[in-house]
Image 1 (cartoon, rainbow, N blue to C red):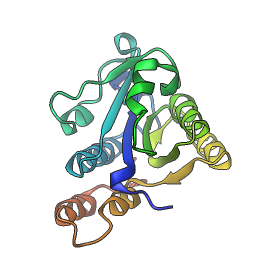
Image 2: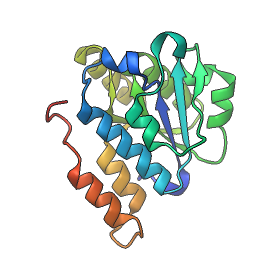
Image 3: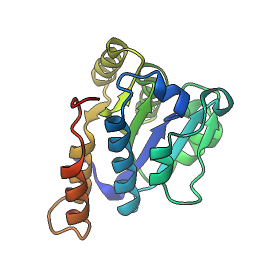
Image 4: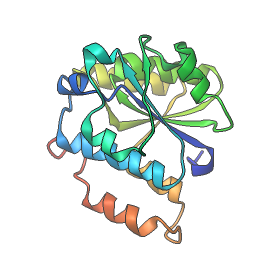
Length: 190
């Protein structure tokens, strides 16, 4: 099943300064890809939900993400690992958008629990493997494999944006294709 802009909601999980500093990858390339994903969703009128885990201890959103979000979009704070276990976030995820595109940290904790909960609730969940990080590559890879085994779909930032666009005739194609072309590649100094 292709990811469709009209059916999508982007969920950005706990991309916070103190968490990011401990992640693998923890790089400017990783943050540039996350920012592009957020900008693409905003440009294509895809709703964006952003969460923060215990912001007093784990810090604010990474500045690259905060700058890519529309003014006035407020992160939803949580103390639960799964976004679905927090009522305010669960309410924000409810609605007619049945394809939930997920990116964030940590892959093996909050992203995993959220994706599995969303899948159990009948949503079509797409976790973007190049937009997720954990403190260890082993934890990240194990979590991605588990999600895939349990029915969560894996995708990449680039494939998702091109699926949202559907073709070169989309009015936003040129701008987003240029941004993708100029983006540091995953694995090139993550």
